[in-house]
Image 1 (cartoon, rainbow, N blue to C red):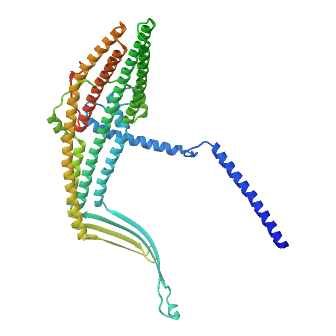
Image 2: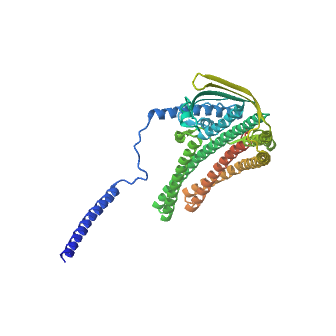
Image 3: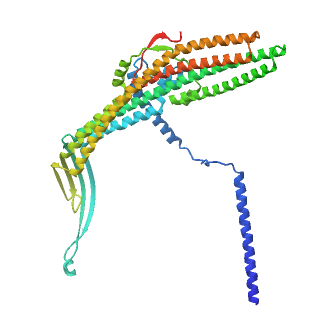
Length: 508
């Protein structure tokens, strides 16, 4: 009985001590949780990593060097299309004022998309040399040491007579192999690589023209955003004058209180639209900086205005120019030519290779014991699988047919894009005169309504309607000019060459 009671007491003590320890652990865990709650919440904790200044400086210099070489390539491509414009420009000498040509030139030397496209072309350029390297000799050298233990099948007495049961060999070796002629396979590989490289160069030109188009688009949008802000500022001023007039009329008892309230609402709503216009202007400024590739360009002053000169275009001439200048079409043709050469290359895989070989060995049981050499010519097939070669020829033929179809499709797409851009330019050209007339009429209507309100003949609703009409007419006119400039830039992009502008001003 005593043993049973003692067992119960010991168990109780153990359980009580365990609860105390568990409570302390729980308390410490809760304290840690509370301490973590007091800490600032971070998505990713910042690691204090040491910066290798020398390594970062080396990366920066490497980046500047690559940027300079890519810029030279881009300038050469650009000046081929626009020979009258010098693409060399210094951003630090602009004093915060840029023209559209300045932005284009800066984009050529700073935009990472252009550098990527040119570097991609350089990758394919290196493959031409890799193809021709088949005709260069290949060298190999080595040093071997071996110990060959002889298997003894005789008795121990006979084995003891042999002075050495294993052989040592020291063998330094040098060898060379060189392809002399492969019946045109290497030339076909090199020609294919050259066509692919030329295609990638045209792809780089396409990237340049897309960047130029995006710069123009961003520049024109920024100009429109500035004009839009000016329009809303004038609207705020007009509603402010109308509010003062309404209060004056109310003070002398000529107008009811509702006119003042209505004028205050219009004035507040105009100020809200002005805030939105300023926000749009800031976003357009950032968009231009992104299109150029220079973040510091966000706060520059634009020297140019939306172009109102008439473009002289002829559809037939545009199509001819596009077929000879459009980079994407020329790139598609080069890919087709490359696929045609690849067919000949696949067929030549059935031919053997003629090569030369030679080797020199020096060594033996001792390092300087003896030497040997060999050289000769060989005509051989290596790893010939007739079924595989036949199917590779079939693959090359199918690939060529695909690129022929792609080229024809690209020609049709170019025709459609040029036609669409040409029609859009003509439509926006014809819309300018209509928008200009509507703007003049709306301005006259707004002036008359404001004058009527000043002398007490008109009411607030009539003034607001005329003010909104004038506001929309201004924005519509500037939007038409914006579309005219954008469609001209689009036409240049799809044609692949600049279009001419005349001396006639559509704004007059």
